[in-house]
Image (cartoon, rainbow, N blue to C red; front, top):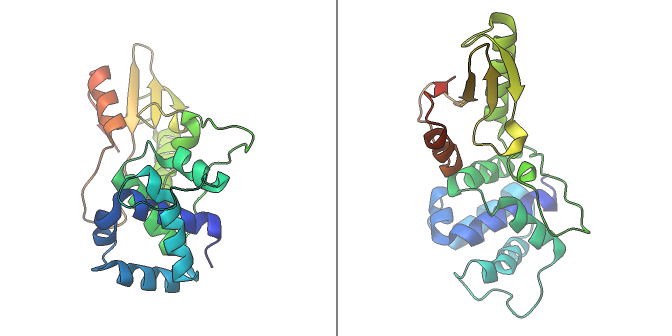
Length: 204
């Protein structure tokens, strides 16, 4: 059973991306979405809807619960996810819907600010496995570039690893696929970083 903290993330996705979220999750109507999500998350469909409504004043699709201050849990989720794009949040939502536990960043409830490192530690199981494979592959083979491997995944740099060789620095973005076919998607942060660095990207 998915806990409430995880399930609230799904409601955030529904609120922020509205009809697009419903369609991207494979539903034809909001009723279909609430009914199916209620069954899969084992949470009352009205609760899921109420959580969505709490986020609505921040996204403008519906009035939502504009007359009251948001709960701390709602504010924290917004802080954690507001810099992530639709695809990234959808992948996290899908993992939660499928019953996979996501390691959400811990936030000090006495603070309102969320550091960049908290935002960028949200990676799905497929991505984590690919990154771990790369770490082991580089340790054993010293490829694709020989040098010191620096883990930058939790720093919000726009790339996963840096390799410091004798003559240069190289930046690595690791992408994983859940099946033998599929495409790769880069976030704006990743693409803008690659452009600003003006480095030949290494795909692994």
